[in-house]
Length: 289
Image 1 (cartoon, one colour):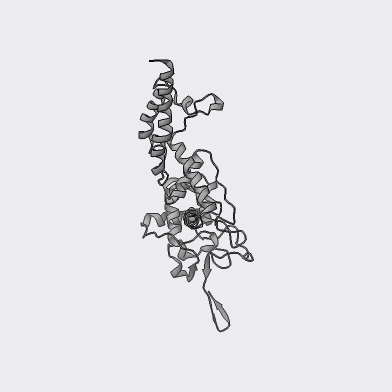
Image 2 (tube, helix red, strand yellow):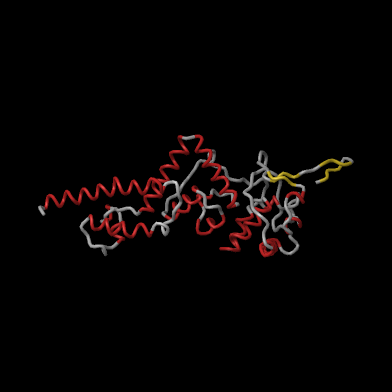
């Protein structure tokens, strides 16, 4: 076979891979949230074909195959890597250009933020710790995969909702829990928190900010405490008793068996959005909470 013919034959195969096969694979993938392990069964035979197209042995080092051209590699992105790139491009496009789809994405992101239970944007959190706590939505999986690939996603505070502390010395419950527990224990504590529909310490504290209310300690919700949430929470069913035993253990480790808050909560910030409203009424010129 003439060398020139062999060259054009290999070039045609490469163009066919890039412009036909890869596009046919990537187009439906963009609507899904596959991890790198999910795509390994597809990646392995593709790697062999790519190396044959390039005229290389199928045992050629994959690290060199993946490495950027600037570092002496061949610059062949994995299917999962291209999957992340395509999702990021689509995400940025819809957030900036498509108001209807942007609203859906932002709603999904707000729900993920609520499930994490912290004031810090979830895109800045470590998914190894926090991803097991949330519903694996399209945007949540984008956060997981982007962080794994060392890609940071930053959104302006005017676009992306994050909870803000309504009182001085206030703190998110999950910020404290994440320093004491991990893995499935952290998941169970978070499920108790979502069930109670609370985010900050002030949500479960007395009005004077000195102690945790016993009803929240015992797993009773707002209906028993006379409080109302101002948010739409994800549904969660009844939890087993072992979850509530862990919840009580966590609160006792944090505030002691007396449930006295170590640092008393201060006054409410002016203009702060109250996530958990306190109901009250007047009786004989007395304020009843």
